[in-house]
Image (cartoon, rainbow, N blue to C red; front, side):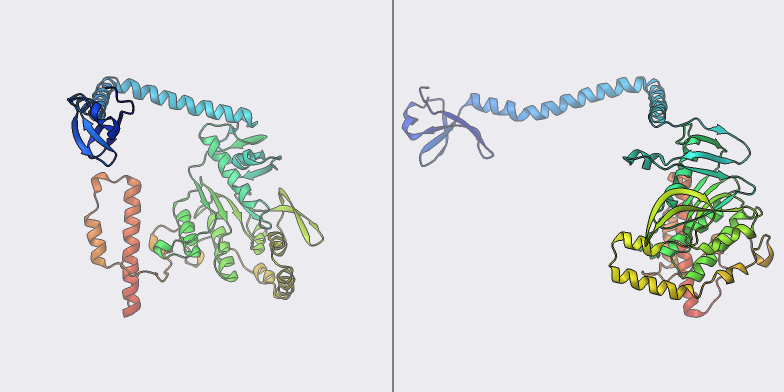
Length: 436
């Protein structure tokens, strides 16, 4: 065209167009169609440019159509060999798991455990597989002995941060790793098969359902006592700490009694606690053993040795741990004064006089129903009406519920009805014991 500054541009109004400055508009060919006149230039289009625009703008649609055609074709070919593909996928997945277990076992010096049918969990030099992998230094290993006779319950005492929770979790993980067919992080391990592993660790509330930290803890403990068997492994971390000292100690004591009694449960249990009074149970019950986490005192400071040893701790070192956390010295000093005064009212003598119940005397019975363990608590929210519960029950799609979903739904609806009835009973003074 002889137009030196001829440009092709694009906008959403005209699409693609030629832009020619006024100094060259006399050179514009006749086939150019004027679309817009500006102050210093004019814009044109041509049939050829329109065709090119249609080709470019339609390319994405053509690409999508082509991709879908290829997708349908691939899908048909896969459908023809779906059984072979699924079989291969399962084999590859199994091989992947076995290779992963083999690799991690070799890299981390895991050992092959031996299996027994005597109900024995005996671990020498056990380590926590996750914590060990995260540490730069050497992990302090510990031994474990649990059986169905004299060592079915281990009461573990010691200060915070000493490693009680890590130790208990490592035992649970070693048992779990053994039962999935993996070598275990230990020097030696002789393990029985457990039917379930129950844990009650950590502390958290449930604002959504209006449950306090203590209520959540008690619900979890109740669930364990309902569903555990003599072949289960139970991990309990500081039961009863969310309420008063006497209530918490009493609950923890009763839970240990219940678990230790073979008429009720008799499960192998690791029980970490700051209630040192529970160490009295070793002399009162023939299947309870005391352990503690060793520490070394250096003046007012303590050094955590991370080693589980026989015997019970005589104190929790809570003030020393608070000092490590950075509490002001004035707070630490005042805490020592108060602690010395409270120590004068030691409850150990009272605890020593408690008689352990080893049978069903006193009306104790195995928990089998939710109403046996229900603990009323004021709700933060308005109680659901009976009609709402019935409406929700009618709307449940039974055909598409898994067994676990069905159990959870039933438990939730039952809890909502209890809340409704409890509210009515408080208002009217009625007895609900026969309603559920």
